[in-house]
Amino acid sequence: MLTKRIIPCLDIKNGRTVKGVNFVNLRDAGDPVELAKAYAKNGADELVFLDISATEERRKTLIDLVLKVAEQVNIPFTVGGGITSINDVEILLKSGADKVSINSSAVKNPDLIYQVSQQFGSQCVVVAIDAKKIDNEWFVHLSGGKIPTEIKLYDWAVEVEKLGAGEILFTSMNNDGTKNGFANKALAKLSELVNIPIIASGGAGTKQHFTDTFIQGKADAALAASVFHFGEITINDLKQTLQKQDIPVRL
Image (cartoon, rainbow, N blue to C red; front, top):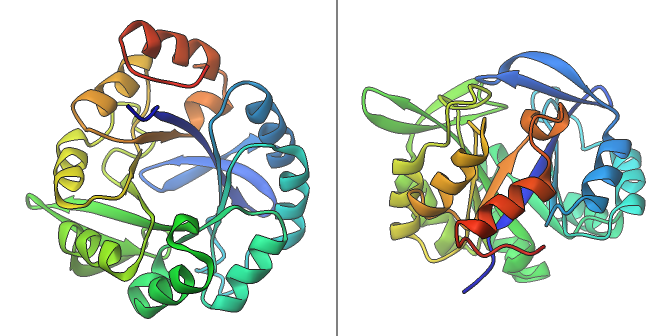
């Protein structure tokens, strides 16, 4: 059985790590380079770096910061934000990223998923999907959750797998930052519909929430930010708890 992965997420704005609730009210969470270094040392399986305002500000990802983080970590490192072309992906991979996360640009230009998977392999393509539940239906949102679309979550997930995505990073905007747990029903449905790994994001508040998302949500990995950034949960402690509950993790 494949081990379940624990992934801290660095949401970056103006060169700092930030964290909000439901994608708004951002507060400072520290220096991304120092946080990345600590997570790599303390048992994180992977690290995700999202330049959350790059798309909105119509600029590229902060390459110099990616380079600095990459120098400090020896675990798989995913970078997203402002990626719109094969050239952007190439630069990020050369700068130390192992995978890229594409979100808004994948919706606007689905062929980008296919192009990147063909050129660099599907294993390095993570399609991030930010979705909000409205009237009992999940809809995809763009530009850091600011632009709603009429695209349905499950339809888009099936489509991105066909296009060559290697993983899906699903963030529930309803759960994000609330610390009330992950959107496990939606996650379980996603895992039934696609054959690629699903990373759960949005809502981690307790160690039990991680257990729940692996069992009820059938997630392959769980991503969190504030509970790790502010020291509410340590990764080593979390993994030992998961192991005691017969959830396979890498210690």
